Length: 446
Image 1 (cartoon, helix red, strand yellow):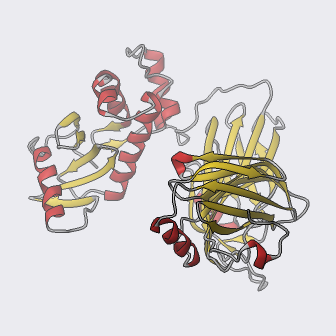
Image 2 (cartoon, rainbow, N blue to C red):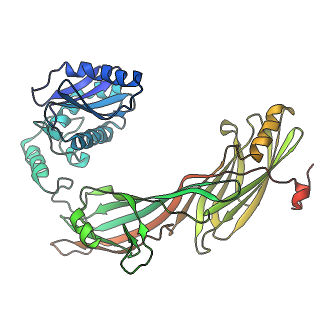
Image 3 (tube, one colour):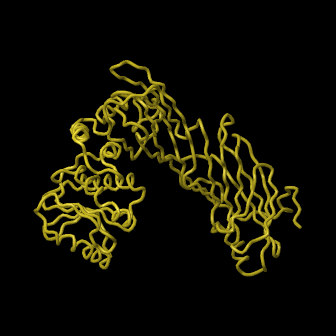
């Protein structure tokens, strides 16, 4: 697959390199950065794979480093890029951060990892949990027993899980986490919305068990035959342990899990959400050297649920100071570094609404203040952002129907399932609303 793997700094200087085959010249590394510069000068898109002078270059960039694979043969480019990403993940697992300094301080460990992860240019063991069992920063010499164990892990079809695991209590924890990305315009209409979901697991199981996970019938990648509207998942990604053929045939997610924490699958749903889960509207009024905000938050989800740790960030003019707040629930604070004030609610029950008021002083009446008011009227002011977490609730309606554990010893595992909906990029644009007298809300402007 690859003749040479190297990690280069931003100037193209090799920090570490490992030659697996001798069919490419070492000088090929010197040509990499000049080719990148040439692409930039010609305003070309910098692609992850390209060929020059009969040499194939495949690379990814992380921070200020390039991870590069070089080959002479007709290489599977996707396999090479996946390997480079796995190498990056393993090095981050070992050293917590992948930087020039961490590479210079750990040459021996990195060479050992590169030798174990690739053999004669072909990927071998790429799971960090398996590698950490016999390659450590403190002790680099490999014992014969450890080498045999590593060989079994590589050649075994289940290279992501070690054999002989034992637990006194066999448990499986499964979290269905959905993040809502949403943009709402000044009229309250949802302009953009999507759901990013993931199924995260923690497995503490003995032996080599097989798990079977079934989701509710409404969830499918295409419409059901009955004509009922199905939830169309896009960009579905599974952990390598999932048997894809089984999933394609009967929608059952069957797998032998890694030990400990891992992400089983992720997905995206480009559905139009009719109304925001949490709606925030704000009126902004200027009175000379003072500016007043009236902010109302409404929980537009079912009453049986509650949002926890709600945080509403309302932007204010950069030179505003001396804040005063009147809050019916939670607490409010001024964040000058964000040019905003933050309203925090530990709990917001479904169907409930609260209204708070904030007043800030402005140094002088300047054109900037007028521009701020005009920007508010035109919807050009920075949007209000909302953070929240709603347990026991999913926007898409995804549910776990069953989670079965099959192991030759016949033990019964205890499954725990949790649902969480949280904010992603959740922004609401609000305009300047009528003054207090015109609103008739009972507030007086002083």
